[in-house]
Length: 376
Image (tube, rainbow, N blue to C red; front, side):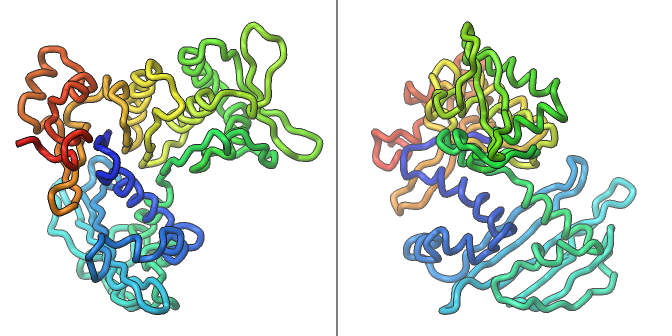
């Protein structure tokens, strides 16, 4: 569980978009579509910087595995984005002792090699490969081949991330009928997921409704109904009325709370969930409960949440919260609240992080001080 705080312009959305950008690079449209959508390198690069953008991701396939590292360098030419360098470093565990890390995939400018197999060894044969286009990612391309098990595992890991850009307006839509297992990034298939849960996981759907009723007491039930034209309507029934209303007439807060609960209670949870500013449209007193839902979901998925709300912080631990601010050069810096002098002592005495934040005890990330930088 990681929560990012900080004033406007401190870099929270940029960090959040790192995950969205990588996920899009592995999805439909690939690197070029993700690059175009963000205004190309003119907007992607740090201002005043040159050269490639570098990503390095360290991860574990399973909690007890040794970490693996994925390295990606993206540059730009007159023809568009190019993958300059890409490699995957892995280490074999033998007799409960991890060995030295070694590369099982390495590509430069579209040419390189991969070591295949379920448990690739350093001494195994390196299969030479060349990619058709300079903007193709080797992990995304070769990870579709069954023989490259470890590369495929990394590709699945990234493509299964859920980076939320939930919109109440999109959740009000009328999608084509048909059950769908996972909520989309914008929530425009909320009715389809409700249909799937009703058909395949009715007990889980009942628990979601129970949590929703705790936060929106008048909500009695939610259902999806197929129309003659093949569209799917999302219906919300309020007590004490007999007839439900269409989702398009429900409040933004009700729809967003329902969507968040659906994501956080996913029966096949994604390995990573990113939620940006979940407090929007929600009553402040609902946010500690939503924070508890996030922490419970973090038992099954890794969560990254950005927020401006002190109420969302109430159930959070100091080591889970990081404050962003910009230094005198304009670059984003980060400080974990458990490393801020005095904060652990306050917490031990019963203080809440949200209270300490509002009282100015963090010393960084305050929009009323210059750049939110540390006070002198």
